[in-house]
Image (tube, rainbow, N blue to C red; front, side):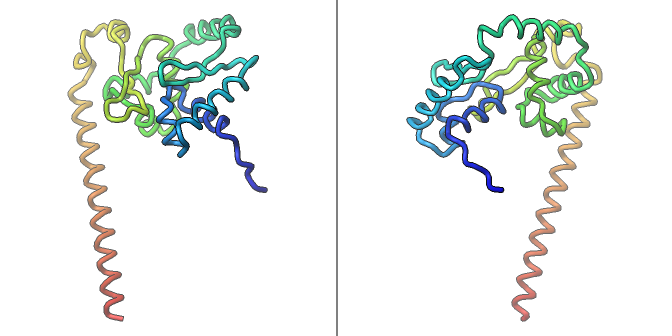
Length: 205
């Protein structure tokens, strides 16, 4: 069974759904290896194709994003109220802890730390006003997530450094990263030694 190629507008739809955040036309152009004029044309196709659906294509300046339609607002509001009335749960607390002690973090970094996709947890925390996303100065294609003042207020602290055992946790994180770096260096050295050994064996032959 062969996979049927999908149209450019469908690829854009998939990317926007997966990213769950605004993306620039230039970023889509780079990801999809397509000219910007082709991306804009595909966006128009996608916008038309979504007419009458529960999701719409929003555009602002040079960025686009998927969002629920105004017609579905009452339904979404009911769901949001239900979500906000629930406890954060283990996944929410886990994500908040990572952002508090290691943030600001990108979604990719959170996914790596937790070992699972964090898109929906982040959305839930954003809705609750516990975290906010800001532009990533190192990569315009992504955002950084950090705690809000509201979260600090809920926790009864005036700054991140007032978190319980903050210094001890930071030391453990630094030590862990140090072990990771040493492990990476050891792997590189082993690979280099293996390559040198292989070259020597070939020379002897």
